[in-house]
Amino acid sequence: MIFKKIIKSHGQTLIETIVATGIVTLALVAILSLALSTLSMGGQSTEWVQAISLGREAIEKAYAIRASNWFNEAQKWPFGLTDGAKIVNYNDSSFTTASGSDISTCNNCKLCLDSTNKIYLHADDNGDCAPGLTLTEFRRLITVATGDDLGDVCPDAGDGCEKKVSTTIQWIERGRTHHIVLEIRLTDWR
Image 1 (spheres, rainbow, N blue to C red):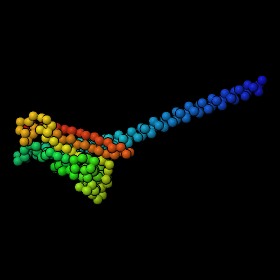
Image 2 (image 1 turned 90 degrees about the vertical axis):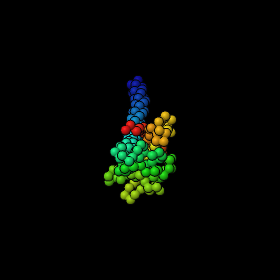
Image 3 (image 1 turned 60 degrees about the horizontal axis):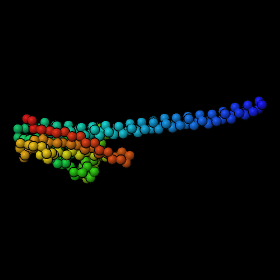
Image 4 (image 1 turned 180 degrees about the vertical axis):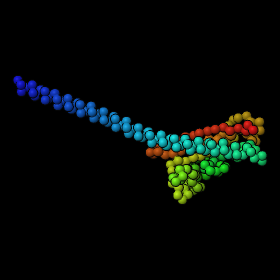
């Protein structure tokens, strides 16, 4: 009789141990999955923040180009904001024509990193970086369009009453292509 009770209790302990091990294993897998997805999302957040910063930089350059030409009496609207596909670096005083209007095939839309100064600069027309710069996954294209093209009613159709400046940032992360588009509309309020 005593022998039967010992066998029964050992059998129940073995089953309980197997179930407990399964539950602990399941919990560890869930925790590790959550940790890995958090790390992955953290990396994606860094890329998104950098892309938004690159887009904002281009929009701020559009404001600066318009503002710098306001004070030049020889300049008239659109104050250096001519239509078309453009690129601009942080230290440029005007836009440069892009080598294409499609960001995926535009060579000089590619961005190179100067890791010493922590700045991004556009590649040359062949898509190559200057010496000392590293090619990144980012591309930036700025498109300027006149208000007339936007369906606006403008008093002087030759000049247009509004400029739409949009910047598209594209990058590839883990084999997937991402895009962010930022846009502003500038008017001749002077």
